[in-house]
Image 1 (cartoon, one colour):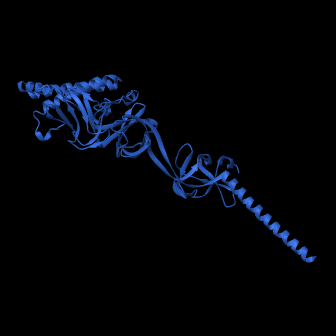
Image 2 (cartoon, one colour; image 1 turned 90 degrees about the horizontal axis):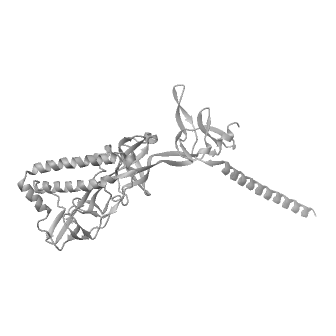
Image 3 (tube, one colour; image 1 turned 30 degrees about the vertical axis):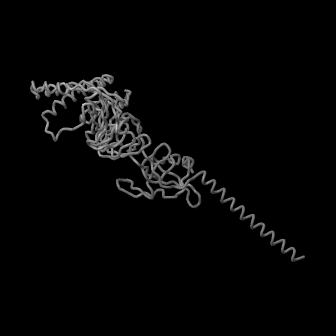
Length: 398
């Protein structure tokens, strides 16, 4: 009987012990769950300052026209890289006018002073450039297309007249007549071939940027037309060659963000999901906006044919301990957070905010310097894995 009672007492103690273990484990679990609801451990993070902007691609590009008419055969695909003097296309004609415009120019030149003709052309070209700039400044962008065509004809004539007096080593061999019915067109320089023309190839250049009102330009629709075709007439555009080693981007940004941009600063630019780096080389005043001119380091997909687009500028990346914004409180005019000490009691810690966005702030860890009574002192602050409480305002009066 005594032995039986001892066994029952032992079983009772074991049962109580097991119940205590279960209760303790449950308490710890619920305590951790509760803590996870009210707090979180500090970890390292980063925040990109992202500024949405409208912008334009500025390229070094040469538009190639033809002096022949006929059937076109292309040898280079859109966006493909080519080398200087590489065959791009050829034109097959069934009827050839032996006395073409080049011959007429030659007859004129033999009877007149070449330099006078070129001086006249220079004046006409400068006048057309002035009209183009005035049209852009006044928002009459529809006139630019016609002026551009007129400009191309003048430049083409100047080139043909100029080659008569130009040393052979300075000539760029764009087209070569192989026979009476076949003309081949070569690449005037290395680069990327594109058949997409928007009419701004001779306008959006470095030399013109300070005279362009980008606010007005941004309101215009820029039509990009594919000029690849089966048949061409004399003077038609065939393609353009884009320098793939050098391009720029000009971004139109509200002046509110001007402190984020300094000449020489390297920033990231997100274009159609691609991130490329660039360097600020000029900041141009545009009334309520600024135009940020960037030298770009890497090409993006289809950069040879796109012109106007929306981008995200990422001028600054903040790195440090990441705090939820709802944890921040202001006490005596200074920002801080409440952290849980070893007794799960909320205690206040000053923080130094490096940067922030809509959801998080990045702060310095361990300690930071602060001026107190004219002297610099070190202030202890939050550390990695500190438990920071959410909704910090609740603890201000505790």
